[in-house]
Amino acid sequence: AIFRKNNLTVAARFGIGTYNFFDFTNRFNPDVILPITVSTFYGKNHHMEFGIGQTVTSIIQVNSDFYPERENYFNGTFFMGYRYQKQIGGISFRILYSPIIEKNKYFRHWGAISVGYVF
Image 1 (cartoon, rainbow, N blue to C red):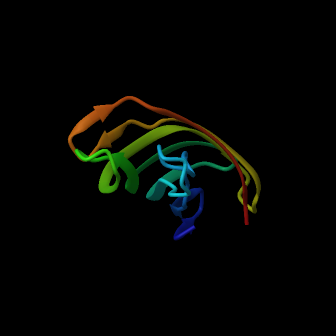
Image 2 (image 1 turned 60 degrees about the vertical axis):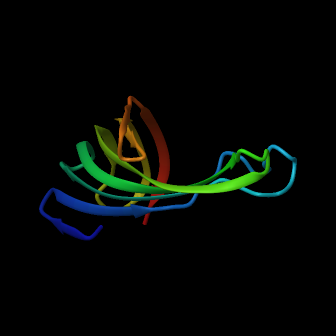
């Protein structure tokens, strides 16, 4: 947590992810996703959570000559939903409505389920 006072918490999250390890030519060339978010939630164990963030995305596309070409762009996001987390750490669970503003231009409805460990 960045900030915690009484039952109010402000937290930051960052990560790395992928959904393709190989490009369309079957060469190792992973798509990379780097999410960065800030959220706030209030309560003891059961919380409503609200947040905003940005995702840096680097994916392989086919260019006009039919060769792999890396495309990099930003996706904005905001989210709101339910979070279960004890104040002193342990297992956490979240279910969120988390739309994506793809390439900061196209609005896509999205959801998220998260299970993790807080320390």
